[in-house]
Image 1 (cartoon, rainbow, N blue to C red):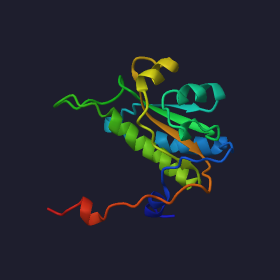
Image 2 (tube, helix red, strand yellow):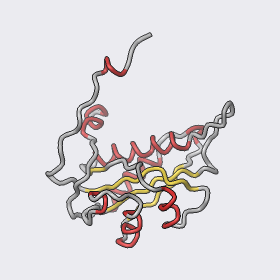
Image 3 (spheres, rainbow, N blue to C red):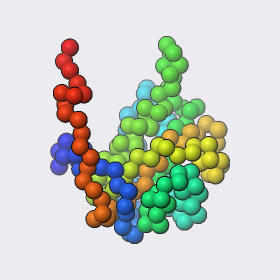
Image 4 (cartoon, rainbow, N blue to C red):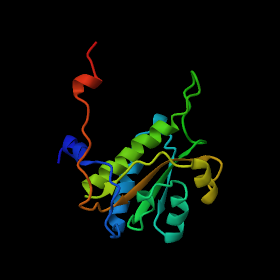
Length: 171
């Protein structure tokens, strides 16, 4: 499959089959994340692969949407930025950790799509509560939660995208 076909295949999935994701697939997905580029190759991303019922219950407290608390979600990946390791631009001290984690998370989502798994970016969660519930060190900032699993047939088709002429121009 071409990259464009894979990108078009990936969509946000919120309904999952009650089916465990194989360790080999999670390992492959995480290997794809590990190879994501980062500013100055500082590699500031850190991940928690959440599979235990106890850890899932804690994570579900951080985002109150009903679909997110489904018992059918077999695994969540909590992607964090290590602010001690992220590169800061010298001109204005802009921290590029969020950019680095975004690149890595999309690698995760594309790898999941390649494996016929569904995923969804979740950014609207309580990071302070998340940090507290998981006793994260001060330098780790929770950035994105990715539910991961086999999608059900209930999933809708991918939402339409703007035309290329609406998002770009040659100058």
